[in-house]
Structures are given as structure tokens and as C-alpha cells.
Length: 254
Image 1 (cartoon, helix red, strand yellow):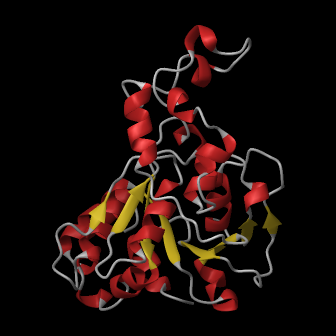
Image 2 (cartoon, helix red, strand yellow):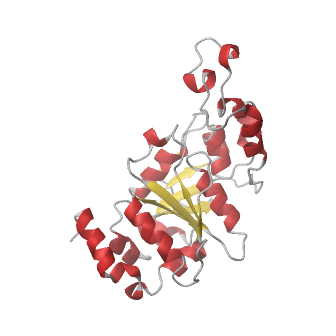
């Protein structure tokens, strides 16, 4: 199995998820239903538990989700006033019966202008992918090499992953933590694929969706070549040291 050793050494409870942009040949267990406001995070969790899942633009009508899985500017297409919802809301202008996120706003930004600044700087993908596929590590061999690898990890495991990102490069700023919707680390990691010296990307910071995510978990998403680098020379890594053994004891793994 591809790179199972790192999974075992980190004691990951969920499999790393391979993300395939534009793949149309993988046989999938589940297709995101068209027309539904499908949050991407539960599909990633299902993939981390063994399912191969596909999602296309029609099956991703959450504005932030469409942006996150690289289906272009989902904000303009699906919710042009989202910058108001992400700031202080619509207030008395909200439609009758509107949910709190519309009326009160998410309050991620102090006002709509600042939220629009964030929105305007989003690196929307315009690749026009027909679909995106999520697959667990145990099924990568049947599909091929993924474009990105997405990992659900607790803070101890995230700490080790950040260290491992610099293991072969000596790079201190090896991981970035941009704010965005719960799945936006995918978009930012896709942007990193085009960089000569890419970074890994942390995610799951969106508190409006953390209730749908696993408690006490964050994520790390990276281009394939960073995963390859990170899984080399594991017997020489920090995961073989007394420091990691103390953490293993705290996690109840030894």
C-alpha cells in the first residue's frame, strides 16, 4: 500500500485522501447529488473512511465549496452578496425567515468592504475540471497518483507533519494557514502545485462548519511531491525519537 508507513507512525485514525482534479475514469462509490447544497467536508471524511467519491460543479452548489474544489468563482455564480454574509450580515434587509448567518452574518470580517477585499484576493481556479475525485490512500493504486493529499490530523500529528515538511528542505516557512471556508485548503494547495517551492496548507478553520467536521481535528493539504518527500527516510525522522514516544504514550498508542 502506498506510503502506509507514515500513517502507521503518526497513528492516523483516518486515511489520507488523494484528490484528483479532472479524473473521469475512476470508479466511484458515491457521486455528490446534483442541485444539493453539498458541503465538501463530509465527503472528504467519507473518503478518509474508505469511499471513492466524485463531485462535479452541478453537485457542488455551496458557494464556498465550489471555490474550494476548484470549480471557479462560486461566489459570483451562486451567492454574489456572500461578502455581506461573511461580515456583519444583512440585518433588517434579510428576507423574512432568513437563517442567522444571513441576518447576523458570520462576522469573520469587520465590514462588507473588508470581506470583499478577502474575496477579491481569492485565487479562483479557472481550469474547468469536469469533476474532482476524493479517494483514500488504500485505493490510490487503482486510480493513480493524486494531485493533492489531504490529511485529517489532531494537533500532535499536525505538529509532526509540519516538522516533516522541512525534513529534507530545511525550510522553516513550509506550511501556510490561510483563512477560508472549511475546504479552501484544497484551492490553496492547488495553487501551490504551480510553485517551484510549494508549501503545505492547513485548514478547517471555518468555525461555521467545524460542527460538521471531526472534533479536535485540523487538516493539512499538500501537492503530491510534498507527500513523496515527506514519506522518504522515515526511519531517520522525528517519529522515531523519545519525544514522539512521549506523545504516543499520551495518545495511548504505546
